[in-house]
Length: 232
Figure 1 (cartoon, helix red, strand yellow):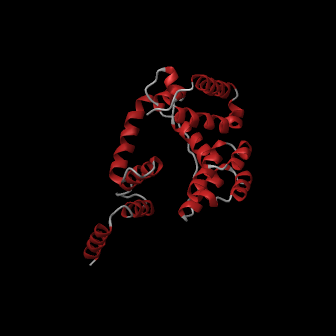
Figure 2 (cartoon, rainbow, N blue to C red):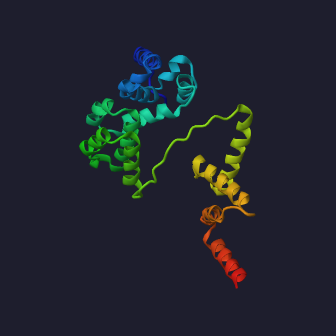
Figure 3 (cartoon, rainbow, N blue to C red):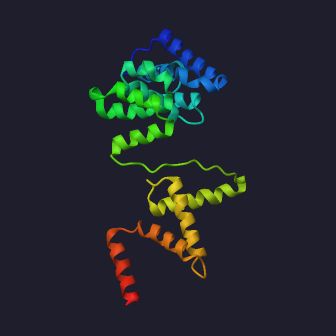
């Protein structure tokens, strides 16, 4: 059974959400200062089914209206509110919602044993990308390779070809691979072909080495056995 709809409270919360979203558009540089409040209200909308006040069919439909570009951010903010202890949420305005999301990942894993003070200190001291890598290492035990964003312009007519190439690479390499990883393999394939004849053998060797890593164990053995036979 759905919860009894408190129309007065629902109207208040829905109005608050719209106020914050409108304020965020006007104050882009200061948007992080109210993300904790927004996450709290979104959780309440879902729990109380306040979206029924607008004759909507689901919470997802409500989010689609408020977050037309991406509902992911809404779920991020809700995750922060749900998993971080109250004392952490009070101080999150200092570090921003993106770091808050990383903190929520650790808090979700550790539960009551979450070391709030230590992780808040790291969030304040470390740059955003360094903090993200610190959390990744904590959760996986692996040191993530540093990354960098690369920007370049493409024409709209080029986008379908690029997207199809990346999607095809993802099907071949596995859908768990990042788009950047798929792009690297497309480039490696191009370089391997470009340097087959009278090209740079070092680049060809590098490309072939990258491709070899994708082979399952049995296929690796077959490939190496074939190389040994050719060499002999």
